[in-house]
Image (tube, rainbow, N blue to C red; front, top):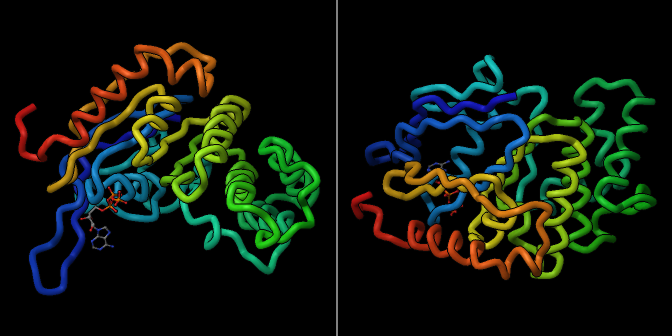
Length: 259
Ligand SMILES: Nc1ncnc2c1ncn2[C@@H]1O[C@H](COP(=O)(O)OP(=O)(O)OP(=O)(O)O)[C@@H](O)[C@H]1O
């Protein structure tokens, strides 16, 4: 399904000041099966854009569409994974129950939920972890559980908001490869917000660069690196370094610099 942002503006009300313009007049289309990373300095509206795609926030002007339907609340066929797995998983529930709850909310039959939970746990490499509690697992394992829970819905679109920002470098590299694998297996469109430019270049088919004050899209850059990707050889490619420098310059330049 195509995800469309059509001339979207978002401002937040402020108590004793003019509303804060978080994202200004932004338009873009994300095609089926694309992997799009969103980068930009802090406060440029990355999470705001993602939350409007998820239907958890409403645009002040313009519209978001999934397929030909305007997004007015959390749509079917779309899952979100947040950075803070500690808060998004229920610590008093086993892994199996944490995943099953997503299927119950979608009113799936019990047998279907059980099959999807097993499938999702196998997809993230946690086969056999059903009866553990989140607090018995490492941060990386908990984020795998959060990804598995998103997969239970077999989403067409997965939105990820800095999902690997809180884990160590090796775990992060493993999780990056995991997300490339499950994206392929579940044939999902992925929109992935990150502060890490290397991560964006490694994962994405396209990188969207935003700038702040107000948040706006300044570059939509195709990532022409060969697939399948590999943490060592891909990151040592001269083209990887060129793309990373181009994006770094865009992210770091002053917001009022001419295009
Ligand atoms: N609920 C809110 N109420 C008021 N202002 C908000 C709210 N959420 C975000 N903002 C403001 O909107 C702007 C964009 O915020 P947003 O979190 O989308 O940026 P971001 O690029 O994701 O930032 P970061 O990289 O630091 O997470 C910021 O100036 C932020 O302070």
